Image (tube, rainbow, N blue to C red; front, side):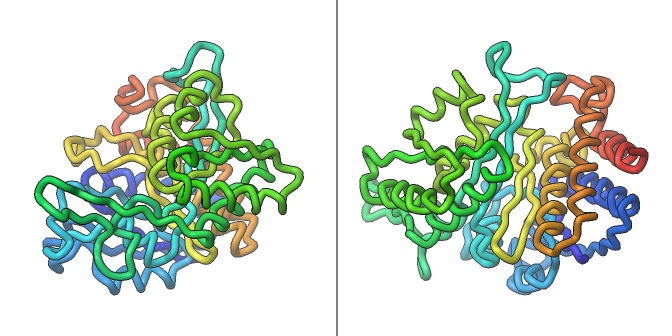
Length: 357
């Protein structure tokens, strides 16, 4: 099994290095025979090749069994016509990585932002190839325009095909959990776009009679996440809503730095931390690599399921368990969680725990 590693910008190289360290430890324990190849994206690519993402890197990634993608400093890139290509968006569209899966769960030994006694264990299934994002809504051109200096217009695209397939993944995921799906929408205002999305979720839900389906307006869902997070199992949402709600859920459950994330199509999967590139922390050994490590574990789980290799799934579970056992010890936590450990030390702790278990 071959994985391509793209370290990215900011803290990306540091957290990716620790994720690879942990995956290698799992590979040795479970005899996975993993091979890693490296290439450049982001500012390293821009400096060397004049673009943040070369077409050949995207094409090459399609030939690998998995992808580990580091963080990117999109906001600091030059304009697209000057080489500042949105790397994440290009991967999502180019490899059709439509399912952005973002779990959020509380841990009894990690302080949360929730009311005392509340717990969270949910998954947000976010559609990632259309919606309100202007860089992935048009065959040609950009889905934002300014007819005048005082007017800006953004176009939103919602299709039946994309809505149905993300809904199907949500119901399939719920079948492995507590068998409940909540559709997030704003159909009372966006009658056509959110109305179509909600219609598709309900239609797909008929294929899964064992799964309970309810729906919530996106604004109401934020209140329920705070008040009663236990009510949620799998939340399915369009791109924009899912992006915002997943950050909220992860921060409430402990920290955005603890949130794993993967982007998957029917044939490809990419591990990518849920948080940003934190350039102010780059090179200081202060970043928390947990999100990247857990994202890599999700990648191994996906690879195991799609290639019929139970050892990969066992490795993923071992990594998840090792992360929790390390986090249980305050002295092993990174600074964002009140601990003294650096990025490298935390990765070493988890790798050692994976090897020792």
